[in-house]
Length: 506
Image 1: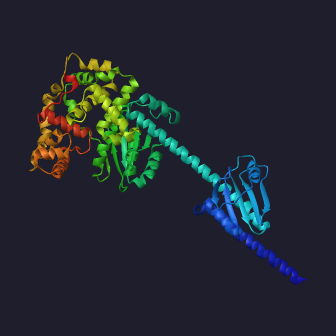
Image 2: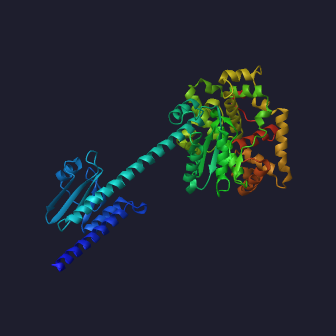
Image 3: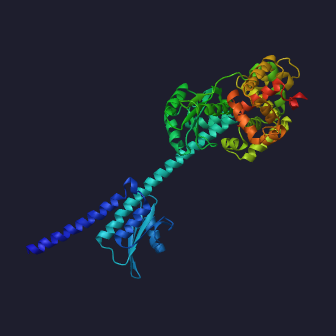
């Protein structure tokens, strides 16, 4: 009698150990390293010595190996009429369990097929595994919802930046007001560009968001994989970003001067220019330095009169069309068409088409560097005026009684000529003829091969000379933008190049 009792107790103990073993294995699937529905279904197949399959509500397989399921049976389980079902067909034993609560749409159906009947333990395995699968599917669903929300928010931030880039501040404020009230309730802001390795950008963007909160617009740059753009009205944000970058390897920060929201594109160009300097700084940060810009050495009234006359063909366009053309052209003059397209979220063909339309209206050949410099000057002059006064009317008032002002008249200002001779005179210290190479390269509209042919040297020599010019003049030349156009204006003012003909001079 005692022997039978001892044997029964031993059997119960072995059964309990087996139950504990499979339960522990199943719970192990919930560990962070093992949260994979496919792995859970595969484990169940092995644990039950059968075939396991996870199907969605339509019968499509999500995980495991295919199991033919009776259509009405699947419909009964997914509809909630049955929480589970078991049947025997052609020597196969099948068990199907609904994954998900009875009063909500089903997440899936878990089915197991085996050659031997289901005992109590294997039936419990299927039921408990369905619970684990439900937890994992809901976690994945929550994670996916969170991911989509983050992507949507990121897309909205980018859309706001793109609207600001084309000077549509009204629409930008309208979009921002719903999610970040007060963010753009300002007239001016700094723009910062942070650079890191592409693989580290996501972390840098999240840390920047943590620092800025709702006090700045943080955007993953659509043009450069390693860049994060931060538009910050508050000065404190800039200080916090400098602290973030300090001592961090392969991470740099370039900042603009405070600019109006309508001049976000200008601020972006300044920040990118400062970023180039930041890479050479011990602390990895730099802010665009205010220096003597050629337009500030011109007669303001004459400059406004000339720029208004040059851009007058654009004034007949509807406001939104004009803003779109002007914003795109300004970006296209600052950067390549490809980069401008990525920033604006359009195709490069769209950028080129808008620039071609602008060029056609202005009667300007934008393939010529000197003409690009002139149009860039006019666009920036008007952008600066529009942020401080009331558009065309203010432009006319600022122009005063200057009559017809030609581009050459602006370039003849004594202060501008003195600045140009001083700037280009810095190149004389180098034994190479850097000034001659630079002049030929600008005359060739930035084409190194054509400039080399004109000079009778190799194209690599031209590029080498240009790289030598950049640190002397403290301006980037090989990348298009404001720095290059300032150097072009210096050549025009110094008389090293012929003044281009633009429509406003006719």
